[in-house]
Image (tube, rainbow, N blue to C red; front, side):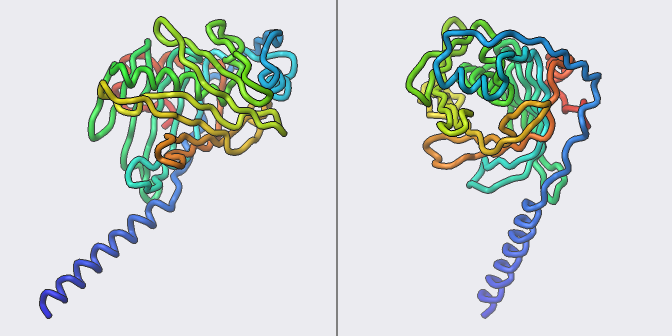
Length: 284
């Protein structure tokens, strides 16, 4: 009887803590305050170039028309969920900072009951990746560098004029709804398979082969970025929810809901080498 009572008590305690944890994960954090920098947002444009694959040209005409904006930097803020452990959805708020086509920095706050409990800092500066977390950090790992470089270009799904205005990028046709996007990496190139929606002309998903593990000798895995929903930010119809998935996991491990996007503002302070190794404070 004593053993049974002890078992019941332990089970009850585990259940209560599990329930509290579940409840805490149902509460979304508050958004970061709106970015308060001086938003000049100069509107330089170029004409849509000729010779693009058919679905690519249609995509840009639907999105921008004949004039393509030149976007040199972006600050993106929002909220979402990540599932890094046992497929448990954890609420996060995030800031993505891009020196478009070159560098980026991600800052995440994972929350419980809406309160930040874990802070993550990662990115790619001067062709070197970094990851800083409470359970470990790394810097300039070759496999991570390859993956981070793909992120530079994949997240441009939120500001896709970059794939036209950056002269290092080029497109190749596949069929009426698919094209290959080639982007620079070190002394060569990487590529994405970009699939367009046949009804809307917009991007449904992007696929590329990426290293998930930072240890040498590990294989690349198909990495998928999907557009989930569409809305208007900065007078441009863009996808404002994106998901990220590894093929072998069978479903997205992260959903990012974009709530603010500021373009062509000074991001130097947020991307300098000293800043990346301390907590993000610009928008707090």
